[in-house]
Image (cartoon, rainbow, N blue to C red):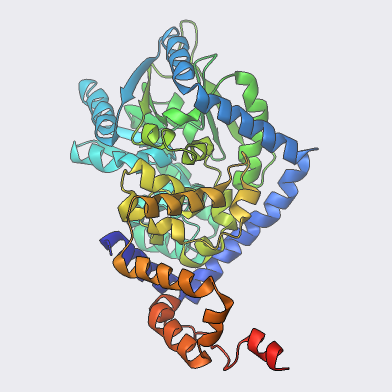
Length: 457
């Protein structure tokens, strides 16, 4: 058993037994569920909207190279710069070099899962560059030395009382401070940082090929400030973020808002097509987009798992997943958690043998597929990962023997009937007792099978 799997089992068992954690997470997800039910009412035909979005993303993946080239051509024609990064190391080095060449010692950063994926903050700090998170949730993660818990809501695992205690201990705010008071404090603290920073780093919700634009959607305004206040704007984006046309945002922005937070539309939606042009008063002197692969081409080559690159990072599948609700985001041991993380992480990391267990951490209930705004068949993709791991031989001798024995018995009714209830219970305890967990009692087989009872009667 790989170390990653052992750690996953340990962390998952610990969190699933933590009732306080379960209550906090499920209370926060309940708020999301209520908002989502209201937000989706804006669509007269939600099924059609999801189908259109899914087909559009499928089209993009089939012509990804062409759209990326078009984006680069359009973006650079307006004075922007594009840097291509094959992996995380190249992406980190590119951003660090940009800052070093311009003498930048402090950057502000808006929320970005990709920068978390490549470890950008740690890299910049090692190079003597202060990197400050400006999203409220990410800011709390940073000052506590924690990790993001959720794609959309980094501190979903913390209650309001816990957050208030953090600010009391870190900054001396009164115990039990309200969310409004904490937000006001953080806003005042960060305002000066925006003006002092030499560069602002953002992600990209979408990259628009026909206009060469970066589309940002947010609710706090920190992304806009990170882009507009510093003299250099650095965008770090995955190559799968491409959309062909500006008009596509008419569909994708409402879908992302509804499925991400339950809103009809996020508070701030920005379209940036390059640095400040002549005659403009606002915006950065330079704008650089770092396009990152980091395993995405590897996933693109995997059939049918490539379909998961259509993900728009709304986090809806995490909220719907019963496994995620019980074990939380940290137990997965990867940047991307939940059903989508279980599918893409093994391929993007190039370590299916070490992370195959994530695809088995699922009930296959299909709820993730049901809520995906772009119609990714997530639970089928999990099955495909399982199938691939077996095909490649990433199984133990015990697993192979167990499956052989199981199939041999189950193929014939008579063989199953010959096993007594006592034998079945012994086998159940022997092979599934540890996996079932100490906190639950294994079910017991009766002395006689159903078919034998029917025959005797």
